[in-house]
Image (cartoon, rainbow, N blue to C red; front, side, top):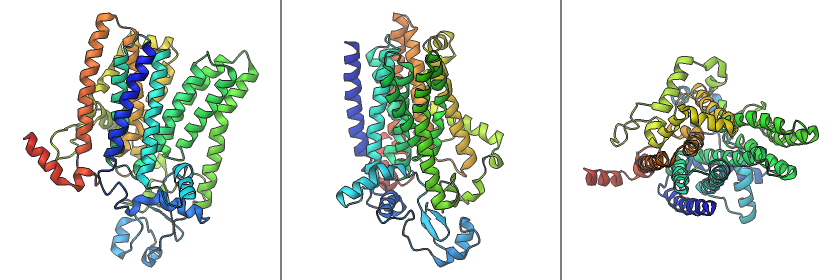
Length: 469
C-alpha cells in the first residue's frame, strides 16, 4: 500500500514538473531554435556525419588562419578575425567540442529517419524527461528498500526539491550547453539506479544482476560522451565494486563476470571516444576545449596541475556551498549564490552530522556510496575551477543533482532513525524548506542572464517588479 502511494505521488509530481519544465524551455527565442547562431551545433554535427566527415562545414576567415594564436580573443579582435563562436578550430576546420553521444543517440537517428534536423532544445527536453523519470525510479527504489519508515509525502517532497535543484537551469537556457549537461545528468542518474539495483539488491538473480550492472556501466560510460565533468561521478564505482567483490568472494566465476560487466562498457566506450578525439585532434584525450573559439584562450588550460591553485580552489568550494555573492545586482530577490542559500532544503544535509544517521547509513552499506558522491561533488568543482577561466551558473548543474541525491539519502535516514514525534517535525520542516526551495527555483528562473526569457523580454520582469513593489 505504501509503495503504491509513493509511486502515485511521484508520478503526479513528475508529470506536473515535466509539463511545466518542457513549456518553460520554449519561452526564449534564443534557446528554442528561433535564433540558433552557434546553438545548433548538434544539428550541424548530425548533418556532417550524414555526409561522412567529422568537421562542421563553416567557411574559415582567412584572417583567422593567418593568426599565430587564433584562440587568443585579444589577437582575434586586433586582427579583425572572425571565428565560429564556441566551436573548436583545428588546422583550418571547425569541430564540435561538445560530446558526440547526444548526436549518435538522438540527432543523427532523427535526421536519418525524418530527413529533418532535430531542434536542439528538443533533445534537451528528451534528456530532461528521461532524467526526471530515472530520479523517480531511484528514489522509489531507495525508499522501498532502505527507508521504509519515511512517509510517502516526505519522499515526494524531497523528489520535488531534487528536481528543482538538479534541473532548474536547464529549463532556463535549454539548447546546446544544457543539452550536453542534461544528457550527462540523465545517463548518470540511470547509471546510479541500475548499479544500486545490481550491486546492493541481493534479492536479484545473478543473471539479472549482471544485466543491471552492464546497463549501469554503459549509462555511466556514455556520460563522458555528453559532459566529461559529470563523468567524475563514476567515483561511485569504487565502493560499488568493493561491495560486489565482497558479495561474490565465495564465487570467483560470478565475481569475474560481474566485474567484466562493470568495466567493459567503460573500456569500450572509452576506446570509441578516444578514437573519435584522435581522428579530429590527433590526441585521444582532447575533446576540443583546448581549441575552442570563446571568451578566453583555452589553450592556457591544457594542464590541470599547471593551473591548480589551492586557495582559489578552496574559495570556489566555499562559494559553491555558501556563496555570499549576489547572483545579479539588478535582481534583488536572491542575494546569495551558494547551493545552501539557493535551495534551503539542502540544510537537511546537516543531519549527516548526527551519529545515528551515519550509523544507519553504515549499517545499510550506503555510507561509502554517499562518501563517494560527496568526493565526486568536490572534485567536479575542483576540475571546473582549475580548467575553466570563468565559472557560470550553469556549471553548477554538473554537481547539483549529486547534492540532491545526497540530500535524499541523508534525510531519509533521519526519518528512519526518528520517533513518531520527530518524524512529524521533520516532515513539517521538509515541507517548509521544499516550498522555499521551489520558490527560489522560480526566482532563479527569472534572473535575467544568458539571453533567457527575462533577459530577452525585460518588460516581463519590470511588470513583475512593479507588482511586487
